[in-house]
Length: 267
Length: 361
Ligand SMILES: Cc1ncc(COP(=O)(O)O)c(C=O)c1O
Image 1 (cartoon, rainbow over the protein chains, first blue to last red):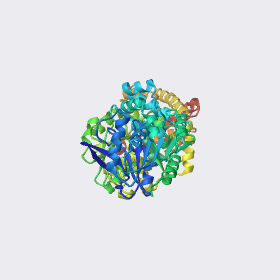
Image 2: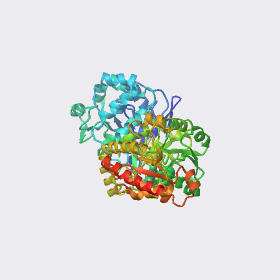
Image 3: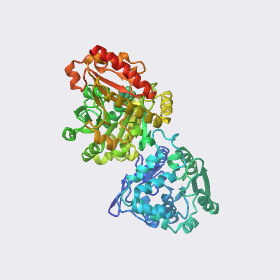
Image 4: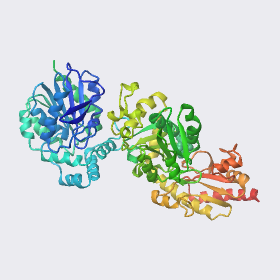
């Protein structure tokens, strides 16, 4: 679906289903250099199991218009406005990597209708980006794509869980097809984000921290430390996968998401 | 295979022909058009020239070296440009980067049949191709034991921006109204090929076949090195024989695509090539029958060396004129060089040449 906001036109993947007011809406927010289809092994399922879904393209990404944003708070502000236009009975926010920061910040400032749950996948805070990667993102984006693809995957060649798709190839292609400047804007936003502690302290809805045990981009121990301090948190580690767990362990991610979101469904 | 080709994914099919058919069926329907190189495998030529027109899909053939002819053949309904990296019988090398640029300027994807080169010798995605097909029956399997095909997608082609691909950029009633290029921005083609073509036509690969091909892939690099080394020795040997009138191998300086081959195929131009014996059909037949190590087979890419004499076998019914039009002489022989000891191969070829000389007088 297309969503108009402040003269720009944004895209949300809804699996072809128009949102209904009597359903909970699951909102998916992608990570740096990615886009809505990074969720294709999870988002569609919810659309066929009683939920509205919106897997967004952030401003300036893939099918969304608007300018690239290089600030998590600005992305979160945009997200809250978009969610208000999608509608639904209640909301579940799901973010991956940079998208987890955006979802977290949006959740901290959430205004009614009610936020039922928050899921932070491949989350760490701070999400500092090594200078080498940041420089590559600015000066030599293909080198940055290659580094991120390699560091994000724990799995070896072969034995892909999704028939016919090679997760590193998909991730690299997604970044290669991203708008000029997108990877640098996104990584800069991750690197500069300083509101995480405050935002986490303000979250009172059930929160799932879901990590790849072998994540090298956003080490699982960072998420664990935050989860331990959070009153209403679930901490789940998936084995044998890294930062690209959405495609490295699609079934495990979907299983945990459905378990958690079903439990926190409104009414 | 997706990893070897540097693509986003792949689909294993029942044969190389099934891979080509799946690619075409996924991209287009009646009223569509293809531009293809005229130096392609005979089975592919048949599919495009005779079979697909019955389903409303027409093909214009163009010489792979003639970019102007390829450009001139493009129509508003053209949905695909198709060619082989090294074509038979002349060993024509397709200027993949140039053809890709031409295709993309028209919003058309380029499909490369990379069967003879394999990802070891050439990686078409690095040179602008959008889709790659293989007959895995050949070098990928490597032992002539099973039939299979593979289709891979690069992920860069923008199906929506092209405006030519409703099958990928508009909702498909046959699968819950899915719009493939929104569902999978990077692998829309593969997704539709699997959800529709593999499901409806059913030309999928059996698990047992996949096992054999995967096992073959594990040794692809060292086999290709040996195929290439042996081929160079055989080419050199034939070059020095006065029974041989002509050899079409792109690594030779006299080959019209020598320079292009040096640029695109630095590791080698592969192990399949044709040469022409003096003495016509009879010499060709005697040569083939005189060989003991080479197997007399129409396949290529086996661990074993293979030989075929088109004028007395695959093209037996063609007149001499028709043969010539297809670039085949009466004395043309096609070899697929295997992994045997090179000296044994040269000795065997001497035997064949001896027999050929006897009938040629
Ligand atoms: C270049 C080329 N492409 C495609 C094919 C067709 O492959 P298959 O025999 O696996 O259907 C062949 C087979 O001879 C071939 O040589």
